[in-house]
Image (cartoon, rainbow, N blue to C red):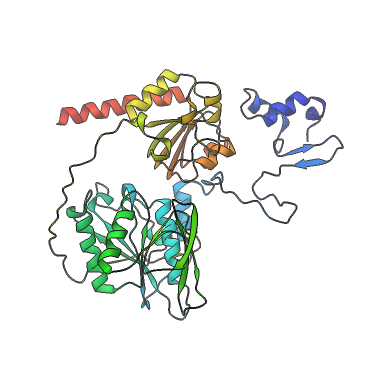
Length: 431
């Protein structure tokens, strides 16, 4: 530790306070390691007990559940090479199938979908002498990019052995009867041992209950954990949330299960074949009694943070608040804020994101001028994509982000708004 810190307690305080305007200058002056180890009054080095990997007094290593370490693989290129380095598992002749129907929100696997596939792998791999395969059923052409390629290309890394893509316009939008007919065709062709569907508001909860009713099964809903049943050969028990999530119900795992998020750890150690398959016969034309009239426009400002899919969140680094509000309106984003911005009176308390505010599950979370306190990172850990705009390239939010922009947030938002307006003008002219 530098002698400057021993003689100047103020600099030590500034080095600890990431929000202080002189924080980076003092850290640079003190050198590497200044923020993690300090000399106490007795001359003993004090280590940070909150650091990832710190070994506590009970011999338990602290692991990172905040997502701070995410992105350490070096971006998408590093993530792709890391996935290719995982051992490939191929199951040629599975003893049975475990079929998963992911929500595929926005055409990509959500964290909930990946948890469900991790649960399916537990069921498929439990018996080493009779291994099963995990089959994913994906609906609709909107899962493809403009060039025809699938938006999602990591089915194998998520644990899928067989991939059935039902690419037909009849499944687009809200089409539960058409989708149910397709699942019944899958049932007739392969008779899966288990059906796993996300118990979510994105359509999985409705479709899973419809499927169970048509199959004559009593579904297990609100499942968040499974374990082998000692009283039944190759049987399973599950813990399910009941009574408005106030109690846990232990019951045998039924053939149709609707599982909650974090029901299992997502697949991480292997990659699987994700072999494309098709139905043995064409689907019959359904007679639908439901007409999808499209989505109803909703004012983003009136959407609760916990339900918002696109959040533009402001922190201590925002200086142009009028520009921030204008950007949120043009982008169609729901506004959020860090605790510092709320405490300073720039945003209302119900817009605070984090462990001390609202836990959010947005598909896209844009953090503007937010350094990334641990409470804030905990509140956004289930967001699919995090974008950080910040001047400090070493802050924790930059480390957590999937995409980082190191620049003045006011200029970035202004340029983004201009691009969106220009694109909309071009679309109107083309129409």
